[in-house]
Every structure is written in C-alpha cells, then in structure tokens.
Image (cartoon, rainbow, N blue to C red):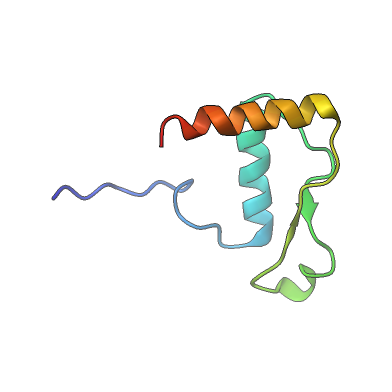
Amino acid sequence: MEMKETTADERPARSADEAVERLRAALHGVGIILPSLRVDPVSGAHGHPYALVCLGRCNLGVASRLAAALRAGGADA
C-alpha cells in the first residue's frame, strides 16, 4: 500500500483562524467572497479549541455560486 504525503491544506487546521483563512482562500479560488466570514467572537474567545466559524450573510447570487461550487467539488469525490 502506497503512503500518500499529506499537504498543509489536507491536515486539520491548528486554529480557528487558520480554518477561516483556508476556507476564505478556497472560496476565493472558485470566485466566492463571503465578506462576513470570521471566527465567532464568543466561541472563539480565549482560544477555545472548538470555536465556531461565522459564514455570514450572502446574496442569492453568491449562495447559488456556492451551491454550484460544492456540487462540482462533489463530482470528484
């Protein structure tokens, strides 16, 4: 059995901030910007290991592009 080398993007994020930045970059890569994307200030306080990510609000066009990007990504799985 061949061992696959894990890249930085494949390993779990080490912090909520890192997870948000990875998500932001991935969304940007498919032309989607969620302006309100951030770490939830309440659950993210004091470096809580299970902080929540606020995806924020978006308009119908962005929601449609996000759904299309997710469907397209699922085709490879």
